[in-house]
Length: 140
Length: 284
Image (cartoon, rainbow over all chains, first blue to last red; front, side):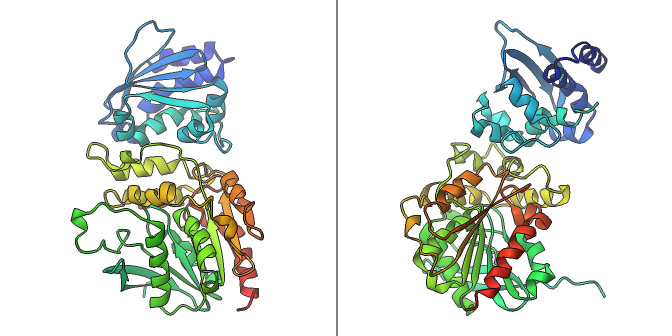
């Protein structure tokens, strides 16, 4: 799957937010510590960047799949939504105040979280690390 | 012989709310007493860098106690049937009792977050007892950034893991990894419900918007320092408070979040040492 994601990244190099979303599975699955911390997390994250929707399916800490919408009627566990611009700023190597954390963006009014929050809160460090991981691969 | 740090830790018993509480504190240095108050759900080891700062301890006797229920201090006997909740009145009683127990003469109080917030009430109610007050990440009021503190104390979510994960966002991206994770470790160690109980004061009981205008900084200088990455108590929150207090001295700190003394002690001391130098020259 990481090979396929890599090919897509090359095809959409002009859309950095999309490319970074697609980088999540490989970066997560290559990080043994992160996978270990997520071993009790199995959930489907709906990630939205502006009008683009992504379903990230996590099974016991590993990313099983990432799909890009649009979706007509799919189940998900919790949704994390932000504008394209907010994601772009969130993934900068040193984000500006307000864009450095999911909850900071929520308070700023540029991100929202909804759905079943128990798995989100029970695995919060893992979830936050997963959505922030493109920051690490940002300059590749 | 090991290279021992100059910090000494001791225990004392304070009577608070009519009940004995065994309290742990650390100290280092000599000179003007500087009492340091830790953040909600944490303990006094947040100040270990300051306690080990020989430039500061040359002129200041730095003291940091663990609040009851926190760190090496115990909850009072009978705690097992109670819900812990920090109140404004209880917090003030605790600080005054600690200072009296050690016969500290007009100490400086430096507090962060809840500790910063309480300096505002110390300034309003007891200016004659303190040489100066330093409120770090302090405001009369700060709008909440998650609206259910019940998340912090329920059996199906690990309170320590959650506290660490929530607080991680309040640390500036520039803060060094080692001190970032030390700070979060402190959050992961709290007793069940203690962080939540402290936030009762931070969010509910400690709304001082109707009171801070009564503070007279001519009787006791008040310094307010807030980090630019703190979205719990933002620089704007502190600025709004400072604007209501004639003479309050507000500084926004760059590349710092909600835990300056703990997350990035080197960066914090750039802002703190000039304040302490000024306080030193105030005389009695």
